[in-house]
Image 1 (cartoon, rainbow, N blue to C red):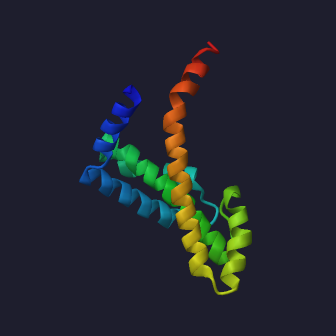
Image 2 (image 1 turned 90 degrees about the horizontal axis):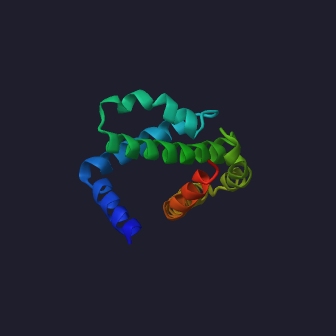
Length: 143
């Protein structure tokens, strides 16, 4: 029950208007930079690191998450429209999405990438939250 109460406290902190604003700004900036070919999510976070210097730690971490996920989605936009994947994780998106765009279905390809990115990110975050204590306990046993 301790995990659920900690999650409730975390959601209460994350869903404040100021933290939602930092998340939105992070997604917007991450998508804008992630669209550039050759710049992946990790480099985008590194490039935008100085922006968070004056932000409180909770807001900065939320902004970093928004930057990362926005950059991950931005790479799929370049892959679909220009057939130029910026990182290796966008290769299949470039193959299938660009084929859809050439056939006049760029909108559905971009929508599929956005919805898929949101759903996969949500599932991965939930699984990480549930399994992180178990993995940390296992890692500490290595000594």
